[in-house]
Image 1 (spheres, rainbow, N blue to C red):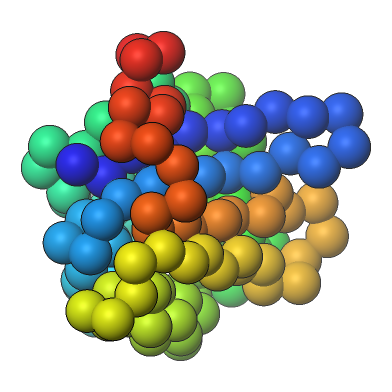
Image 2: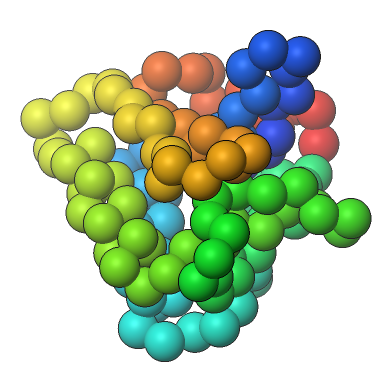
Length: 131
């Protein structure tokens, strides 16, 4: 099951996505679906069985990019090209030979929250026991 949540910090806040090969494949597919022309997609609705206390929505952007905190959760503001590039990098984490690995995604927009996607680096119950 794909798990995701915001990890607040005074110095280095991060948004964390955790999962196995299938979960990360689903996340990459979800990003590609968004890149094909959706204006807005909820991660929880778009990836059935995913778990989080935090709502994340992919939102079309053309000026302010990256993960952003909003009143009711988070908006991951990306254009189609950015979403496709992130999906391609997530694909690299899903290779059968990989037991673990991660990538950090930032699009270079001031004030964005870095997004870390991780495979096999945390226990399966991490982020779930807090739900």
